[in-house]
Image 1: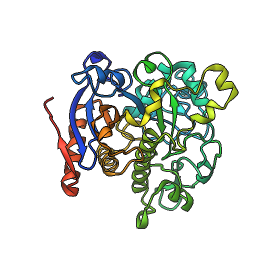
Image 2 (image 1 turned 30 degrees about the horizontal axis):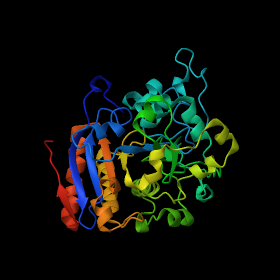
Image 3 (image 1 turned 45 degrees about the horizontal axis):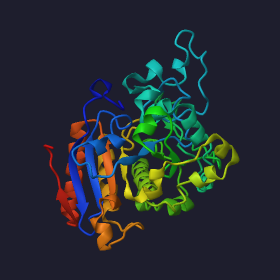
Image 4 (image 1 turned 180 degrees about the vertical axis):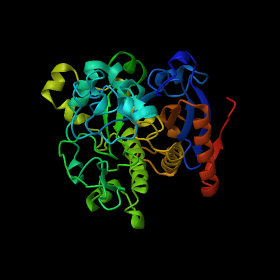
Amino acid sequence: MVSKAWYKSAAPRLIGKFKSCSSSRKAVEIWTTTCILTNFGKNVHNLNDHQQPVITSLINPANPNLSGPNAFPYFPRGGPQPKVQPNRNAHHIMGYVTQWGGMDVGRGMLFSAESIDGLLHQLGGLRFRAECNLVPPHPWAHAYLNQQRPKPEANIDQNTNDTIEVSNIVNSPNPNTKCPVGTAVATPAVGGEIQSQYDRIIHTVPPFYNYPPSMTEELKRLLGIEIGENENDLHQLSKELLRSCYRQSLQVAFDTNNDGDLSYSLRNNPIASMLGLGKYSHNQQSIGSQRVAVPLLGAGCRDFPKDVALEVAALESLSWLLSESKKEDHTAEAESSPKEQLVVAFGLLESEDAEALAHSIEETIQLRAAVTIDEDLNR
């Protein structure tokens, strides 16, 4: 569930805040919100501290083609996406149900508006889809053999009648993929309610927990992934790819010169210029000094266990907090200016998840003893 619509008026609540010892500019915040799309973003600016920068960028867990999940009326949590699109005649009464999702998936059935990406496309409308359609192929797309491993096929052993799962890796590279698994790209936020909350959407694609893409040496190098002896452990590979999603997204968020921000291609596209696409608001002139809203990546449609998703979020947010940013400026003027803060702001639906994330970050901090804590669980 992406939101609690019946509690939509409840203000976001700060659960915890963690600051870096080496820079007063960088911080990680953990909030609860009834909906990260419609009740977070610029709303946070209107709370107690009116001097804090607004949250104007959102990290969106997307799919590789940036098309949203609207191609399917419903789908099962955890994938994989089928090779063939469903047709409405798959079932004589219930349409698509026998080919993809529906009653066959039980409690795992999701509708597009139950995912952040689906609701984002729904609220953004045609103009937002146009922004996504104009994103060019990613420069790393050629390094991928596929975007997901196929679901193992069940064969019957003729001698024992036992069911045997056979996984045939199908390599289907697509050099036109806009946002491959583990990478991130950015587009302007347009369309009604979305534009009222955010100026910029940073898309990233977490892997399906049980069906990560096949890895190549070039891909490991590009994403900075070191698997070692766990190369055949699919869940470990999925964790490393999810960590890459955080790294790539935050790099795009706080570094305007990063190649992941492909908006330059839109600005030079005559069709985009004619339609007024590929343009950020004036606030984007100082992207590096703004807050970035982050959901719990992987814990929804991609079916990561909650504890694994929380662990990765804690590790990567703390790693970012301790790293030196290209935007860092340790002059007295920069340190005294509230506009220059770099903040990762998690917006989670459930209080227990927010508190668990805060606790996980705190435990990691105790091991590394590198940051100070400014946390108030009762705020």
